[in-house]
Image (cartoon, rainbow, N blue to C red):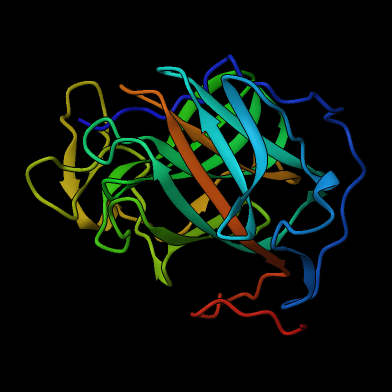
Length: 262
C-alpha cells in the first residue's frame, strides 16, 4: 500500500497573510514567471537546518534544493507572488535518498494560502504520483497514489507540470497527462478506480469509467506556488528543482508545454 503524503507539521516556512486581492486572469500562453535560480532568488523563502530550502550549485548550475534530514518529515518553499490560473512546468531530480518502498514524495505546491491550506502534486523515485489537498490542516487525497511508466524511476530528472483553470486541474509528467482516481485504485485490476457504494446496503464497485483526467476542487481560487519534499522511512533526502516556467493556460493544454511569449 502506498503512503499518504503528509507535509508534516514541522515545516520551516515563513508564514504570510492568506488574504490577497484577486489576481488577473492571464491570456493563454502569456509568460507569467520564469527562473533558472541563477538570479532573483529573493522571490523564494530560503532557510537552513534539518529541514532546508537552499540554492545550491550542481556542476556550476544553480538549482533550488529541498533537504530533509529527519524521518516522517517534510519541507517546502513558496514564492511570494500569488497565481490564479496557470500552466506550470519544472524539472525535478531526486539526488539522494531511497528509490524503493521508502522513496520520498516530492513535487509542486500550488494555490498555497498558508501551511494549513494548499494543494500538492507529488511523485516518487519508485514511479508513483498523488494529488493532495490540505484544508484547515486536514489532508484529503484528491487522487490516490498510482504507479505510472511516465515517471523515470531512480535518481534522475523528471519534468512535472500542473495546469490550473478555475477549479479544474490537470497533471503531467514528461509530457504524459496522468489519469486520476478520486477514491482508490483497484489493487487487483490495473486501470480501475473505485465507485463508492450508492447506499448503506450496497457495495462499492470498480470501473475504468471512474477515472478522470481533470480534478475539480474549488477550495482555493488562487495562491502561491512552491516546491517540496517529504521523507517516509529514511532521512537524508535531497531533491533539486530547476527551469521553472509559468504561463497562462490554454483551454486545451498543448503537449509538449509551450508559452506563446518568450
